[in-house]
Image (tube, rainbow, N blue to C red; front, side):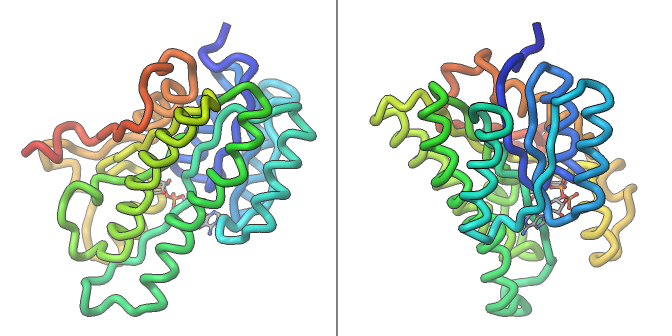
Length: 252
Ligand SMILES: NC(=O)c1ccc[n+]([C@@H]2O[C@H](COP(=O)([O-])OP(=O)(O)OC[C@H]3O[C@@H](n4cnc5c(N)ncnc54)[C@H](O)[C@@H]3O)[C@@H](O)[C@H]2O)c1
């Protein structure tokens, strides 16, 4: 038996980086996964690769998480194809480094639209489907940027702060309603993905900046292992929590 055997998951931003690792780990542990992303070719290729490992384990839908109507379509299509919904990983995200003064209002709104509004919409439309499925687990990707001052990631930190806060309200609301739905946030430090490569390029940083620091650079599977744990019933008493995945960065 896999650790999430028989569960059905949606992973946003699943075409690359942490989302891709989440999809691979969830399928390896027995789940069926609806992969969504704005990157269509990469998402389709991942679904094909996962279906080659286990037929019927994955599907892909193009989705911009800012689009409310598309969220309703993604949830409905997932339930139609796989019969239910147990897990939502609100993973889609991006970062455009800029200081508070340099950040434009447009950039600020964009970070919040993708990460704060995208996470809100995902929860809003997944909760009824999960409830109808007997319950589930929502995993919201936040960041250590919610715990530390990161002026260079100003808008990103603000959007992730909203994700951190809404996670707790969702957890308590679902408990009050006896929905049997848990909701937790994950707070990784720097992890080796295309997002970090792009941020490094924009900031003129090299991999050595991370690899020579105490915490080092996390790997996507370090996050995916925790996503599987939170998606599984092993974590049934963890609700409204914020899990730091930073090898001690925030306690230094
Ligand atoms: N890599 C890190 O160091 C790190 C650290 C902390 C938190 N995170 C968070 O983890 C999540 C995944 O990050 P990653 O490093 O894998 O990034 P990534 O850039 O490698 O992957 C992000 C994915 O999200 C997709 N995406 C972006 N905007 C979207 C939108 N509007 N709708 C749908 N999909 C969209 C992208 O196409 C991409 O496939 C993000 O929420 C990020 O903020 C990453």
